[in-house]
Length: 319
Image (cartoon, rainbow, N blue to C red):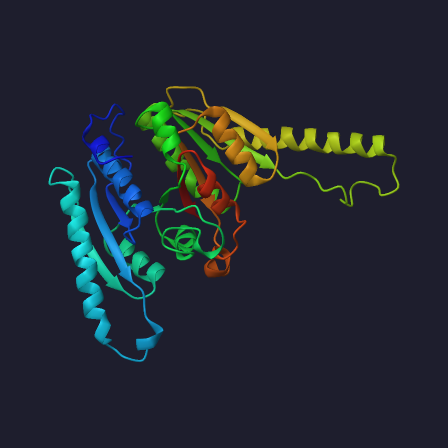
């Protein structure tokens, strides 16, 4: 999304789903794209928007309370923020700019709590390994520990905007029936109502491995295949029923919701459905783990794969 695009009239209805939006930036191009998208959301919702940059601790000065380089880094960061704000122009309002020092996730989470932020926006570079997100692996840590929903703009997210125009026309809610999904559903439903969007509810059944104990190792191939087919069919019916029970009888939606149960690995299934239904937004839970930092260093995690490859924005809610 370009800066010029921010000044064009928005065709989507104001949803007022978010009142206080925080954008975390490291001044990369990915973070700049995230800021542009956040400004659109803020305009649609008449929300206040804050921008934060966190100076990470330098081990070289870890023992010093006020390291000599910190003031210089802070001044440089403040100049970069001012240049960014000036570039956007006075008509694109950023209400508050913040420069903090310390562990990034800790500082961002503290600001979210202090300012009652209801949406955090971050950008991604789309790289693999430990540098997969614009803020480093700490960004995925934020997805799991942030006390508010997190909107992530991946490297392919503009595809939906180019194809469908601004606003959310089709929203994909991907659920594993976990705590994160339970917290994410009300937000997906509220956004679909406000935007008069089509809501698609998706659950993926993991493929049963061939070595599964439920399939006899000595059974003929045909019998094993029949048993697998029966298992998939019964699982599909059970999960479809569970999907339908997620929504209240009166949804308040303009369009009838669609329920989809597939058999695939979670990330692949979500991305396939996103492409098939040409969705503008993916909403999913990010289940909390014993160590969010450890989870952030697993490059094949489903959330990371979805964010990195999604053709649209991804909204996650930690459970």
